[in-house]
Length: 313
Image (cartoon, rainbow, N blue to C red; front, side, top):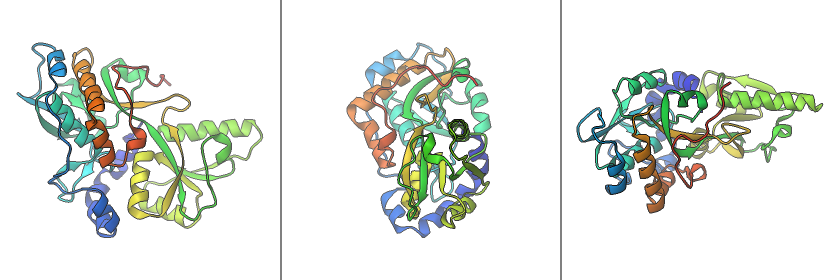
């Protein structure tokens, strides 16, 4: 998933606005722990097989620690807690159980989205866990250990007559909000091209730089649907109760896309990380992390090292 645009637009706003969202949503406060203490965060035991797979002499950024770079911008994937300092969400929780598996303390280093490649290549961090999709272009510079499906979602206002959006013909003639310069925009434009070729009505793509403005546009009937990162839209739907899911599509449509822990190319750390992830899947700890952030639908049955990624464009 290409988050670059959304991260730039939303990163600061979420830090300031998360408390306001929680204050207006008792349901969210009860269902999701956004406190800095994170008392319910799952923990795991040391994984002897994974520890043994770490290359001898691997130069970790810090002794006895797994240092992970993370971009805190979009709940439930990762965001700042109510103290506006502590990073919480699915990615931080996954990072914790992975560090536990390697028998190391966890240190999270917050990064801006454009900075994660350099932070990784320079050795500032040992790995990046921040919704990075596996692509063939990225595989030329980095190694990957997959941990979640890359899913996009179509959401409509709760009273909308639209029941399902799952294939190109379903968006013919609709007004759909999406994010410029992202995979979701690419999918929509491909679907529109296919519809026009089959004589169907073209769709109208709308772009908004402000999440609040696009929500107003949807609720006011100026748009029919929003198409964006499913995990984020599912979170907003649960918190606000104003939208509902009508369909999901892989972020790599028509191919399946997965996000992965990202490490330096050839460092050897990807193999033990994949080992840890698969053992966490088998033990149920991975499932606990998914459930804690309502992301069960995006779980994977098996982690892979450097699987086929999205092709170069």
